[in-house]
Length: 384
Image (cartoon, rainbow, N blue to C red; front, side, top):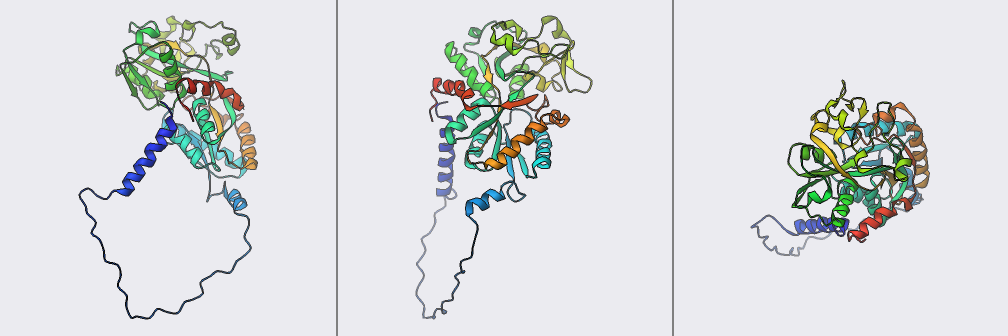
């Protein structure tokens, strides 16, 4: 995991160099003779110079073009849930932001967390990214990506990683996972990989095998299908039958939450199933908000088959961040429009959907809030 992004860049560049330097296998390029002089006279030279004209400053021109149809702003979303859900919901957001600002946006779901960060650094003046805390820490260290907002989920500015196992397994503590097969989401995922990795290292637990599943739903499915012994993914506090979080952030900060409180009450688990239209995973009125809810339609008995073994320390919520050279005036317009959009009903059809990222709101974020993530990176040996 050391120097993750630099390794990615290095491999990409090396591959490009090798491919550009090599022709088809077994092909030898024959040398060619230099062109021979002829007695044909050359035509007289013509004046092709273009007279100088007054042109606007290049930087000002580039800034003016950002947000137009010819140069839309790239709204990047990490592939933590189904890409079709992100694309559809992301377009709802893009349309709302365009209506409010007059700017043009194009929704993009890069192939991985690392690819999202690479895109923001490669296009510093026209990208905005909905990226997790780890992604932000990496991107800010790497090229100066700047944070604007953090997600709020039902009153929580934080979330957790969870360790999932089969409900009928004998595992009782993290120590029981030593020598077992681990299914993680993506190597650049905060809750799906990095935080669990630190926890395993601190507990001297070494998996027999570590497998990248490709996303949070896939990690849950890997446990459900018996493909791995345990998996790691994101955890959010469930809602009780009154629609309120099972416990509050204030209770968590006060140290009132015990390990067994992360899972739903045992007596409601047998009743867990998707609701009539498949939009929620309910357990006798309780609503599941963690990654297990993302496979409720294809695995309606996921709660009966997969349980939480342990949860991580709190992780700062996901961010909306901007490329390091994003024009300040455009950024301010988008920030204002996004706040307004978060108060509309269409928010729940976009990033507020539980099938999307489940953001119930946003709050301004500060760079220093993600120092704990940077410390985590240092603890695992990653250095810029």
